[in-house]
Image (cartoon, rainbow, N blue to C red; front, side):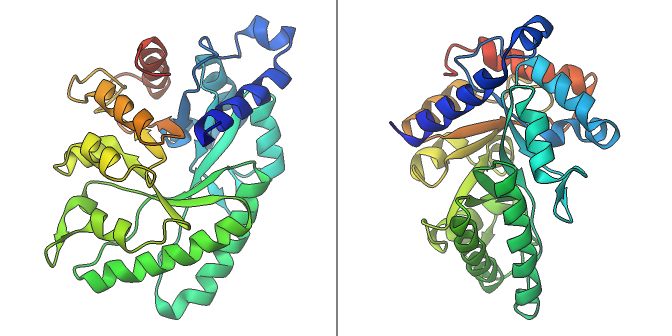
Length: 287
């Protein structure tokens, strides 16, 4: 059994453990239980600030089964203790799979930053996460600036591994620029330890950066186990993203999990996030 299948079965067991007559009656369970569609909760960022339990319940009713958070601070997730947040999600048939969090870094702040990470990674492990992902960093103008962060990410990855987590990095468009003749993204892959650092490819931002995400998924098979599935607004509505080719390449290249992220809205956040789920649930190429 590969890691993706193991994770899929784990999610289905988590959901199945809480699916009783009440949840089924309310529709709080995936409409396509054979598919595991994840959501980056930044997609509902304003709602999560106002009403965490209510927003999670709506997310579950849409059909999402796995979550990636973007609300860590001071040992808590969206203001809740990690175990409390985990239970809230699992009671709705959802699993907290990953987290976006991070700190900027200098050699002078090494001890402080790594202490922060140790607490943060403990919290993610308690919440049930499999992945902890830094979503960005201040990209410098020299390769030495990039190498500093590669070394830093190797450190964080080693700490994550001690806690049973995998640490990774999430791109925007800028990582496909060059520094001293080197594409930043390629340089990062080459200068991070594959046993400590993986990558979550944001397919939309990769395309905006001037590359074909399919090429990168295939080029770095095994290093990119996570995807952010993103579009101009709701998934599938712009017609500019070739999601079939993206998913085909990802399944061939060791995809473990993916998360919908809606950053801009054509309607309301809730409607666009629901439409994104429905698009992927109906897509025959999404397993």
